[in-house]
Image 1: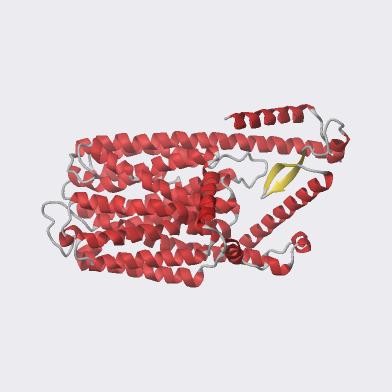
Image 2: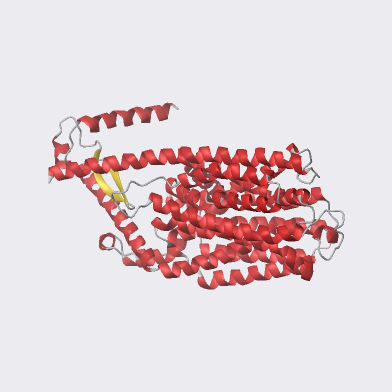
Length: 560
């Protein structure tokens, strides 16, 4: 606290000084007798595409050297962006492969939800996993949620750091292969305990996929498109969820064992595509970028050294304690920014709402409208595909348009307003889904809820990547995945408040509906408030940067 106050006071004094001391050029700063040669000076620079005040310390030669280094960094960034624009068609092809793989990811994760049926008349061991392996609702709830989530959460703590250091194309391919084989292996289970380690393996392998895939996409697409690309990729959640819902139809035809074999086979094919087609962008960028300024200072052979080779050299003699310290420091770097804290909190609330809907939606509908199982399977798949996919695509696109307007005279708007407004509007729409009296009305409200609620994923990740260091994006994505584990407490809370046990109790539609309104709509409202706070803070920074840019433009004009 004292350190923060100290920094705040220094910043305040500096701002007052800038306000009243007419610094018009570097030469004029040198002429100011009150400022020593070791003090700071300001100069307007374009760093990573953003007009920024750059403050350098040291002697005159050291300051010039620092500014030249920053200029090299800027030119390297601009060169990277040019390469990304040039290779945009190939990047879209990579996106398509990763989207297919992500759909396989979600299909493998969610298929179990639709291959079990605990109603009294569902006794066929060919169609229902719980009948074939003889396990209860409580055992199912533990396996479907915590059996997967605990391992997923623990591995997510370090999987992001792994993706920051090693080849992500290999990570995506290997993780997909592992979860696909584990999914197919479930079809050979003879008892409940056979499923437990396989479910844990699926959770561990999928924890490596998200950080590697999201950061890889951020490295191959231009920064102006990150929100849209994240939105497209996160559409795999809804495609996979729709496929999982349609597993009910497959189950009726080929049984639950063959359904799991089919899901695993699709995943193996996707992993082969990842291995053969997806490149590691860090390697290609390092080999390609050779700006004139960099080539003067850096030997070409050093430029062509891959990131992976450098990391091997650095880490060959590192001890476990050093690795642990680096991991802790990486986590600290990610959670330190104020906006990052708010985004992680809002994401946790959103996952609480989403998982509560996903797990309790079907029991609520089946109880409120008996005999609607088949109709629900098809309509739910359609709503998730159309509503969820449309929302995530539109949300990512809007966030990019608002935060990166084509007209330079247009004031940028914080991308976090997209999930903020979407969450606030989704709260009453979900209440309408619960309170509707007919199946048609519930479907319409659910479609509306998906159209507004699911726009949050892409803009949230794009906003998070803006506030954390670039070399910590994998760690940030890993922590973001960890919030999904915390979100699993939402369905458990619903079960408790509705009068049951650990997600497996039989509760009435009325009590379950009221509880869902309280938990889901309440989580939406709180998340909307947190996203709004992030957007307000982001808008303030945008205004400050524009003001600084305008002031420096006037100063440069006068100096000229």
